[in-house]
Image (tube, rainbow, N blue to C red; front, side, top):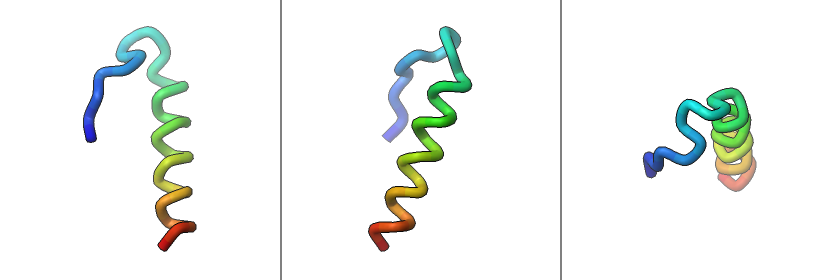
Length: 29
């Protein structure tokens, strides 16, 4: 589940997306 998408370009955006994914998973469960 680790993909180097937008790595170095804008890590902040990637972190935000990852956080949203984690929150969605928590909501699902």
